[in-house]
Image (cartoon, rainbow over all chains, first blue to last red; front, side):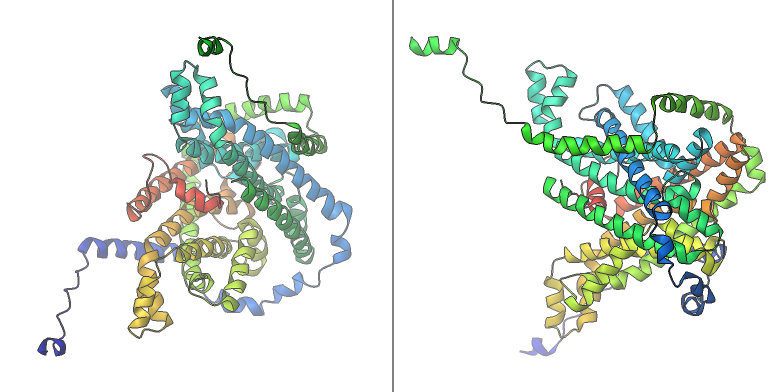
Length: 266
Length: 292
């Protein structure tokens, strides 16, 4: 009975290790240093509401926005860039992904080369590719389509080769043991099991590309971003805001369609 | 005897499945592609010229002029990109964590979680570059505009991921805190946070990796970082310098990716089965929303 009144002793709290302190200190110092470097200014968060710049965003000139040459032609170009680059990128990604997966790779050399090249390609951000290609092959949607093709190839290969890695190896083994050569074995043993994921990833890449192609124009690679860039130089933020509302309305609708297709697939 | 003779005639193959419905998918698909190719004015001659043009630029890029860009202070610019990404991630992480608790369906009531979810979706729909376009007139050109753009955009994705991991928890500990007389906040602090913190902090690191790339790009429109350096070198057609900037950026991006991936793997060790040399499939699943 006495036991109930006596509370049992609490377990000893584990002491934080010196190394944890050290890491925390380093991270904190780094954060302060970085904050100074980016001129961190917390007053922005409340001063932003009274900033006189907002008068430049309003009212939206809808009659300017709702014209064919200002909004809808560039928007169609954006869509075309996204469709072309998704298609080409994903088609090229199919063989490369199989080469990059340890399950289906024809040999170690190809595996290593494709993996290294693709990692390097992915380390370059998408708009860097756009700027490079604009410089190399000229301003316009053509360079934009090329850069998004490279970008979607790199992302698709990453996603899909990891799906192939995780595929069931037994059908492949069965095909090989019945004497199939490499390609037929992969086609019959692995492709059918991973194909739904391939289509779903392609749709996902399409969504990424739609979003990316909106901003391509900011570096001269065609699409609706070109209009944004021009208006930005004239400080016509009211027009930009109107454009953005239309763009993201349409992007949202396309995405919803793509998402619902993806859900049905997988 | 009859059973033996049966084996000599092969069994009939099952009928092949009908393929007519495939055309309903293929034809709109083909029309869309042809329409895009015509619209973009992609002709065979342009396609054949492009690799040659790219090659001539590539040839001028070798050897990279590291000394020149080093003297121009490109290293500082690259580090500025990393700082932007770091502070942006911290802003995103701090803002998204409380919001994620209010957005999870197992711990928040519907009238508060649905507007917050809509907020996450709205933020995620707008790319960082567009946010920066809007923020630059407000804050002025420079790193702070880029930091804010990245921070704001990170709130959307980090909030969504954190919210999903909160929804996956074991609800026993919340019940236990409530049984001891704890209020909602202590339930979150002692019942939920210890369960989700490893996963959420690895998401923060993952987002940091993404943000390093994003902040490099943001410089291209004047929001601080290495992008401006690349743009100016390419505009002057100084290709050796441009390639040096590019290679240095890639080196930093890959180094940060490697370190961050190693730390993340250590944080969630045991929770997910990891590949030996790649990010986990689970992380991709969370990124894309595709569950295979």
